[in-house]
Amino acid sequence: MRDTRVMVVDDSAAMRALFSGILENAKGVSVCGVASSAAEAREMIAELKPDVLTLDVEMPVMTGMEFLEEIMEKRPMPVIMLSSIAQAGSGTAAKALELGAVHCFPKPLRTTPEEFDATVAKLGDIVIKAAKGELSPADAGADSDDEVSNYEPDGSPVVMACGEAGIEPLKQVIAAYPVNCPPTTIVVDADRVSVDPVLAELQSSAKCAVAEATDGALLEPGKVYLAFDKASHVIVEAGSPPRLRLAARDPVAGLRPCADLLFGSIARARIAVHAGLLSGAGADGAKGLQILMQTGAKVFLEDPADGAPRDRINAVHALGVGAADMPVGDLAAWLLNGTAKSGEAKAA
Image 1 (spheres, rainbow, N blue to C red):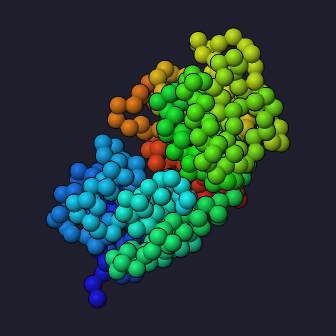
Image 2 (image 1 turned 120 degrees about the vertical axis):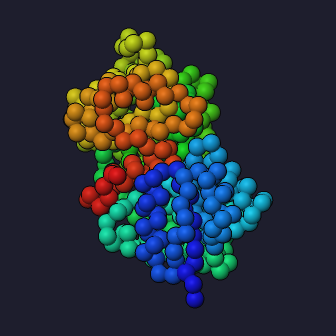
Image 3 (image 1 turned 45 degrees about the horizontal axis):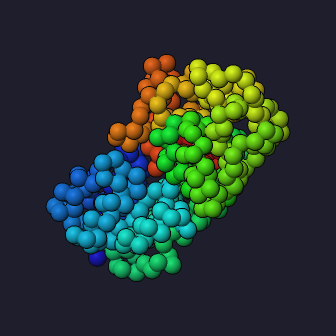
């Protein structure tokens, strides 16, 4: 019996290599091709005629969801969505299944040999079942539940900053968070009229608790705070656990709350964090990220979609900060990976 032939479609070279390696190690499965975009995949599918396609949700130009819809209309075939934001029970997973995907599989949070072997066995079995038409909607996303349920936070915080253009990316990150997510604070440089509806949406849809930043709020697992009140800066005070403090100081570089001030307070407190910048105009957060990196923090930059403001990202690059460039579809997995308990999962 010939192997089940699968094509891997993902805009991240690292993810293409990871999943190709996983699938090549799976018994009864062979990778017939890899593609970095919908346009490239479209031509290769016609030529190679794979039995199964694995497809990333977040891709530039044409998203995975848009390409999935096209495939089901023009050339129906078994498609498995691979993404950190298509968690079981999420709106993304439900939409993917509605459009015709046969399964939603999470990008791995761990890369130990044991976890790799487990992922090989799971994904290989799913690909073979998909080719045979043996998957049911009840099966879809079950592995995502298993992966998230295995996450144990070490308590270290995550801090981010963004402009209005970063609101959609931050929604995707929070949507992929489990109920016991790392304590997360996000400075949002946008008017309340833009952020309030987003906060309300996240409070009703996210698995974790999402709230507006308040004075004295404890940075504990399972809690996400959005700081956007233009009357106060937000800083972090050391403690077990650390806590947020609101400060009615003058604006810094015309901004309040100021990401540079938040990042600087964490650096002074010597708190181990994962920190980064999402899309947005202006350079707020770049200098603070540079200071944090000097304290040993793990820092990242969103690799924004075409057309999104790159001001913050360019400002960091100008300072020579060696931050990890992270597609938003991979960011939640990277953060969970880096904040997992007992060093079981290390950031990529």
